[in-house]
Length: 360
Image (cartoon, one colour):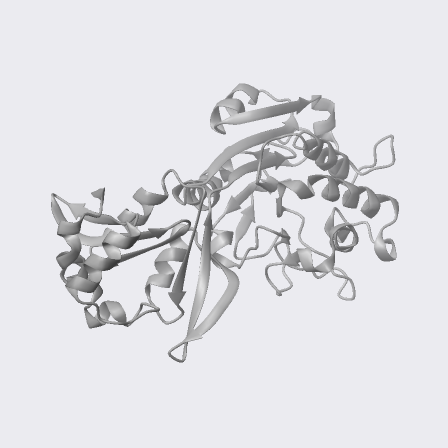
């Protein structure tokens, strides 16, 4: 496939696509234009549009106007994946783009698959809802925290390899397919698997391997400064990220085998701190899942502060793992900037999204 700059000789083909009723139904301006009108528009505006070619044959055109984009495919070439290919080709070297689409347009599913997300802007056009979507190419740091390998002789058995396929299949690869840059930050305990771990997650920007004696402790064990080991480890891992050049952080564990893609299952907002769901230990408190936290990089220090508040002054005295982190984070950044993506009450042990790969 080739995207070549629109020329005046292409205008008859452009109009053949543009004036077709099935095309106009999904355009904000559904007017029919003559060739003279089209030539006048072309000469006055010098549009930065492209003809989509496959094997030297035009199959459609790609519209651009600063950051706004769109594609229209000739009726006889539809359902062949050409629009998807054209968007991927155009967005390959772009960090941002936006478009408008009718809610009843089946192409909206394609845009979502490409990484476009609704930004809240909408209007009514011909009594139909017309929404704006944005594409943002992000640099995403996956912060892997906790035990990566333990043969079970001291503590619970864990092996990062048991969860590796789920992480790449349902998290890493889909994000990279959307055009995002994904890098790794490793914070774990030393083990015989250290070198293999460093080779497995690529690329690794920073890695920390703590003394193996810490591997024998449980997450709820309190260390000398009064913090639980799970919280201290988490804080230390986040401190490694503060000065990094990142847009988004995904903080999770080595032993989670993802069965589904959470970004497809739930509605994430990358401008907010996102927790998965509420945990059912204390129904009158917003206790949240702490195994998969997604937040904009600029909130890293806020999350550190929240963990410290959670440990030193927990709401209602509840100190289970890091499940009481929601309210401290709300105090830090405001309720409108924190959410759980599922209203269901679920647990880390029993849910349909992932399986914890550990045992006694």
